[in-house]
Image 1: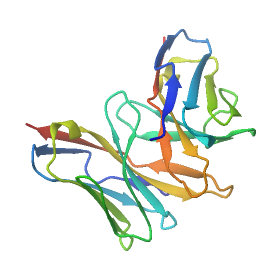
Image 2: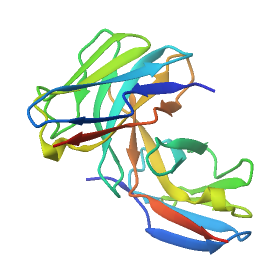
Image 3: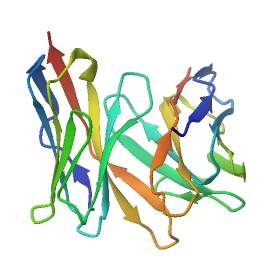
Image 4: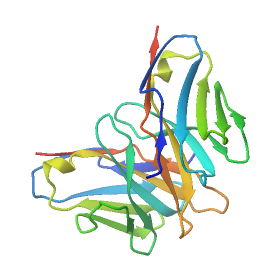
Length: 117
Length: 115
């Protein structure tokens, strides 16, 4: 099956620093990647949709200048949390949609645990 | 706003019993539904999906039922095993105006399997 990886799997940083999270589709090309955030004991909330070669579309309430998304290739999307604060501590999960026609399934990465001190 | 929600936050069953996890959705325009399993500290794992033109779909030990009349979705797990213990999410897929398909997740049900 399709595999999506994330790096790093966990990161601890100081308040005010920036953190970059990578999402890669390993064996398929992903025309669209999605970034979700999950707080403890809560559901996944869509943050933004990333299309290869174009600007990301952010959900209401998600600051685009704080959560920078770059989808430079069909296999890589990055999420950069700029000037991170403790309230940004969360589990960040990406998913990738198989770009082949007729396929709707999203494949999820293993998630990245961000802790901001 | 429209959302996908769950009736039971926690379900405890005995090993070997059948489990039923329920989900209600409110957007009648949704045309694709998915059940995911999420273990602690991991990403969601696809279990089974169903399209709106179907009312039942079976997989290995799992069955998804869709009742469009009452906007209800359920996941049935036969002969529940300890390895089935996890949080289960239903998700609905909406076709957005740009052709993207983003998932809206329900609040989740924790399944605890007692040995």
